[in-house]
Amino acid sequence: MSDPAPPHGAPRPTSASAATPPPQGHPSITLALWAAAWLDGSAAPDDVIGALHDWAPMHLAAAADATAAQSTGLAWPQDSVGAGPVALLAMLRRLGGDLRLQAALPAPGDVSGLAAGTEHAAAAVEAGETLVVHRVVAGTDACGGCVGLVPFRESDDVLRWAAYDAHCGGVVAQPPTLGEARQALRESVRRAGEMLGGMSRVGGAGDRARAAVAADLERSRRHVLPPGTPHRTAEVLDSAASVAAIVRVAADGAAGAPDSSGAAGMQEASLRELADSVRDARVSATAHAVAELHREAGAAMRGRPRPEGARRSSPGRTGPR
Image (tube, rainbow, N blue to C red; front, side, top):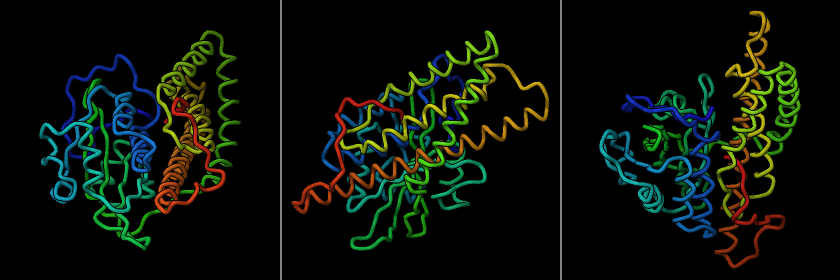
């Protein structure tokens, strides 16, 4: 669920080591949250770069097609060396105007929020994530010339971002509401807890499963949420991380395999449903946070107080992305 894969048509690494698994979560969500905070004025460029650094020491960015190269100013073709993370921020400034940052976590058969049948959608499905930068036309809900950023792990130390023409059709897709996602996630938390309880009763394998879940959560908490992140977003991301950790450990068979093909099928279906609820929760929580930051920035520019209930979290608050 967390290892970014090379996008469609991108060069694949040939000697990447897997000594230390990356933190669970998604670099696209980290970039969405921190870039939104930066555009809001509550985070500095170095803060964004530092948050990305937690995913890999080096980030490279290049365009994946000629259209994206023209709009972003990034190098093309994408097998060129590419620029560093500063180029991602420069790209956002270059796109300018009213930007809406929207993370998407597509899966085979589900490209919600993306234009199906495009190179961008194919790359995002392969990577399991993307950040769509919508360029909204002033005074409307329409957009145009939007860009999709897809990260993939080139090696243990390098995360490469490929920029695509998003072909979003002029409409900013609406994810499930945070309330809907929270309700679905509550049930997933209960089911995941029961699953972990079942794994915990399998002797030594259960001990290994509990340790693996704890380690996965510890990796996820390396990241820091930006100032201005709504508390509800942090709570949903924390709950999603707990479910994701149990799903990942169960899928890896840390507590042993099911004892029949029927049981294996039921477990696979259950894990798929839990993973879907995690994806929906993360997308909705990120959209909620980005929208709050966007509204706060607009209110500040108009000299108005921040919306009631939009409480700022401290810069040191941690939480998985």
